[in-house]
Structure formats: structure tokens, C-alpha cells
Length: 165
Image (cartoon, helix red, strand yellow):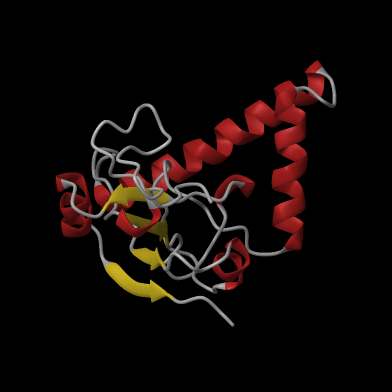
């Protein structure tokens, strides 16, 4: 349990930074973003997640990530950096052509709420979940916090992911 319920007789959570005691399981709303809702061939903003379409694209991404870290030596890191810059330049150029400016930002990604009893496996099995850069990301909000209401106001809410039994 990341955020356990308060124990009997306890009035504070275990997190020293939780001054309002809002971070306990029953008071937390957990969401994940649904990336890549555009169709194939759609122009993607350079700051957004680009979907890896097949195993070959995934392997190229993984290998270029290793090269950028320097695992393959400084020459390969330079080559990978230049290829990534070229790809980013093409993405920016396509976005500017379609929207006339890089300042035109895409709409925020839609979100799915995760039931407190759902497991990580339930989330990863959901077809809407795309793991960007091999890092599973969740957004957590205390239910009654104003930031939670503002978040839901700006995002398209797609529903609740129930646990599989």
C-alpha cells in the first residue's frame, strides 16, 4: 500500500509532507493518460508521446536510447543525437505547417480513473494504456482538493478502470 488508510486512533498519515492528511487510499483519485488518440499518420506535437507502431520501431527506439546514453561509444551517441534532432525537426516542421506555430498546443490527453482495488497488471492490460518511454505514469489527486476539480475540468474523462477478478 502506497497510501494506507489511517490507523484507529491516528489522525495523521505517515507522509511528513501531507499537512492536511489528504493522502490516504479512500481519499485519492488515481488517473492515467490515454496517449496517441490520433489516427495513424496524424501530425504529433514534438512534446507529445509518439506511439511505437511495431516491434522494429520499439527496437530502434531502445537502441537509440542506449546510444544516447553513451553505451555504444561517443561516436554512436553523436550519430543517435543527430538522427533524433533530424526527426524532431521533421516533427516541428509538420506541426508548424498544419498549425502555423509551435505555440499551438494539442488538447490535453484524455484520462481514465483507476479503481483503488485495481492492480498494476489490470492497468497494463487495458488497451487504452500506452507506456511512454517505458515508464508507467499515474496522476494522483486528493478527492476534495481544488486541483482535482481543475484537472477534471480541462481533461476528457473516459471512465473508471475496474479491477479484474
